[in-house]
Each structure stands twice: as structure tokens, then as C-alpha cells.
Length: 437
Image (cartoon, rainbow, N blue to C red; front, side, top):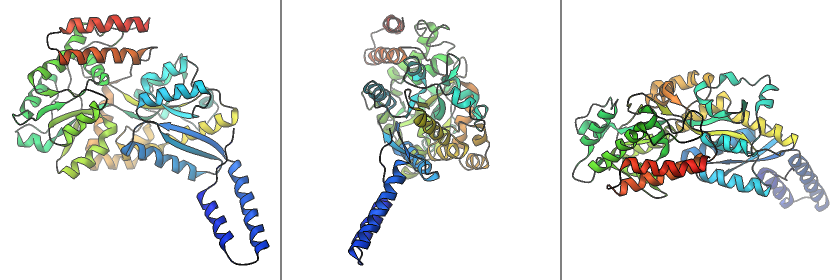
């Protein structure tokens, strides 16, 4: 269904003309003619709604790219709408889909693509790709396509994609005598955290119970979140315990602080930028924002691979773009044109420069603009180089609930040191397997 859209310029023109002198009938006729033309032009546009997550520079990037798209052509108009976190976008999309008023294009955090596809809420993009000779799916970075496929079909395409990075206050590191090259292993990471910690309330790292980070730790320990078939969890293992105990033992030692509650992630970032923690684990999507803050605060910010355990592994993250199902052919084609635009080479370069997210296309990654950025600001290249260690995220029905169950048990273990790691992980596994099965 097409919605009426009238540009503010058109409205201003009409009001200006109506207020001008001259013959009343002539002016009224001219105003009416312009109004009719504007309405006719507006109804020729296909209206789309696009929902996105996160604010600050990430939100600005989304709004800026949508404006670019609207100005690039005169057949489609997209309204961008901020919806909160990824969880907020997902729950609101599900509710809107059930109510019959879902956005035509939205974001899926990569672990949720299969859930949305299996429940019939998003459209397979394979037919659009196959029928569009100008679209080169091979140009996407292969390490970022793992969470795009469901049953052999492409349901989502990489957009604002990330890996977690280790951020370090290099100025503070120099003050306490640490090598600014950063820690490469778990043991070095613990040593750095000890050196940053002092009696005045500063700790080595502030880190919430974030399962994305735990996915990295367990993979580095040689384990996995799920078995190979995806039929039950595998985190209640020796490797899973080693990953959690890295976290838990540092908290016990006082070199790591664990904020809790809904704002835990924001609290960790504030601890870091305010000098209350020397290190931070966060998405590469936070890079541009953190570099701006570091400049304001007067310290040098460096980025690093995640410290490795038995292996060097890191999960990818971020959002893929999806088209909701049930659209008529006109809106499907319009949604496809918008999705193509948002992840074209030029927009990919812009988004990466503006936010710090990974360039999802090889052509963008190898462009003169990105290479110049990496030369000027090597912090932006760390996540790209880290892709050699990247893995996708689990995509099984119920995984978001699994994540919440495990996070709750891990938080309980941080707060109550008398609980054993083995018992905590087994309790979480028993609950989680009930969800998956």
C-alpha cells in the first residue's frame, strides 16, 4: 500500500505562493496546480519503513545512508526508525509482523537469522540475487556470510558487521610500564589487568556478562557453545569451564569488575573512558565513538586482537539486512533496491569510516579510501585482520533463550563465590537443552 509523502520543500513552496500578492484567482489556481502535482509525485513513490538498532554514531550512520538513498532516486522513499537494541528490534518486528504492519526492511542480529527465516517472517533473497545480474554476491567477505544462509538459501546480507576487539588506554599503559603492543595470550591479559589495577578503585578491565565475549573465550579454549548437530549445548565442558574461570577468577582477584543490570554494557564503556579501567572488550562498531571520546579525554586509544587461549578464535557479530515476508511484488522490488544500496561499495566504505564496523565487501575493503584510512588510523584495520580467526554465531531455534539462561547463571556465579563453576554450567545446560529440544 502506498502512503502519501509530501516534501517539506513542496509545502513551503505552496505556502509562499499562497502568501504572495497578485490576482487571487490566479494565485489560488497556481497553488492548486502545484498541490496536485506534488500529490501526484508523492503517490508515485513506493513507501518503505526501515527499522534499525543502536544510537549515537551508529544511528547517525543509518539515518545518513537512508537520506542518501532517498536523494539518489525519485521512485522509492524510505523512513528510517530507531528501535533500541537488537533485542528490541527483534521483539518489535515479531509483534509488528503478527499485527500485519511490519517494516519492509529491518535488521537481524546474525544469530537470529535462522529463527526469523524458519518462522516465515523474512523473505529468501536468493531469487532476487539470481535475477539481478549486476549484483555480485561473491564480492562479500566470505567470513561474514556464514550467518546469511538457512537451508541453502540466502535470507540476509551482511551490513554493519563486527568482531569484538580489545581496547586499551595506551597512555595509561605507558604510565604503569606496560608494553603498548598489548597482550597476546590469556596469561599476558591477566598480567596486564593486574598492572592496571590499583588501590584507588581502578581495575584492569570492566566487562559485563556478555555471551558474545564468552563465545570467543570458549572457542579459544577449544570448545563450542553447541554440539556439531546443534541439538544440545556443549558449554558445560572442560573448555567451557576454562573460559568462564578466566572471567570469574579475575573478578575474584579484583582485576576485573562485572557491571550488572540492563545498562551493564554502557557502564563498562563509561568505566573505560573515565579512566576507571585500563582495558575494554567491545564491538568494532564502537570504535569511531570511542576514538572521539578518547580524543576529548586526552588519552591514546589502541585496539588489539582478542587475547588467545589454546586457539586464536573470535566470533563475528552485528547486523544483517533482511526483507520481511508477505510483501507485494512492488514493495519487494523496492525493498531489494534499498538493501542493495545500503550495502553497495560506496555505502560500505562510508559506514565503516563513520562507525568502525567492518567493510563487508572486498571491493570496499580494498578501496583507496579504506586503505588510506588504515594508513592514517591503524585501529580501524585490526578487526579486518582479525577476520582470519573469525567464526559465525550459532543459529538454532531458542538460542536467544539459551544465551539468557547462561548469562543469568554466570552472573549468579560472579555474585556468589561459593558456587562451583561445574554446577553453574550444568544447571544452565539442563535448562538450555530443554529449550533447544
